[in-house]
Image (cartoon, rainbow, N blue to C red):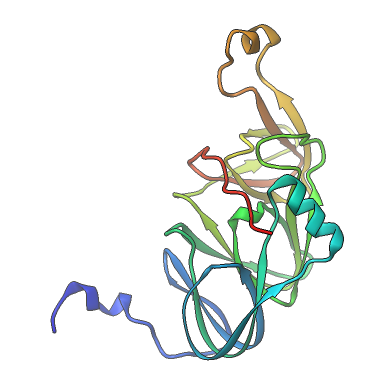
Length: 224
């Protein structure tokens, strides 16, 4: 049987060392030898002896996720085998954390990660009741994190001399050490007349970077 469908770049390769690797731009393969975490419903295929269990996050984080519709609904993947993760054909990226690294990520953009990484749902200081929600996920430690982005991401440097303002519906993540606050770029009179559609942004100050996606679509509420 002949077809470009069977091109070598589309073929799954034999398992190598444990951990995640890029299968292609739209999916990540994780060779599991013990345990990893992934967003609920993200598994598209697996082989081997694996179990998929809903992962609890504690009462406090559960309540935060319920109130805001944001957060990170996880499953634990346990055993020995290979699992492929993806979400609605979004672009996938792997972030390597060295000791001391930390990153704030919107829960809707988390795909999978090593259990060696620490994570917690944190209040976004100064964000108020914005479209992006009150709570994002703070990752730290050493390991790998798989993230997704609808379209090609834009990485914008942030410096003390030049803060960056981002739409809360478009932000993917930012350096955890940045200071956040709410910015209003629309006058009250303009809001009365119907508004510009760009009334409120998240202001990021300090030294670091912010990742945004080329879309302002409203996120689908996370399942509880």
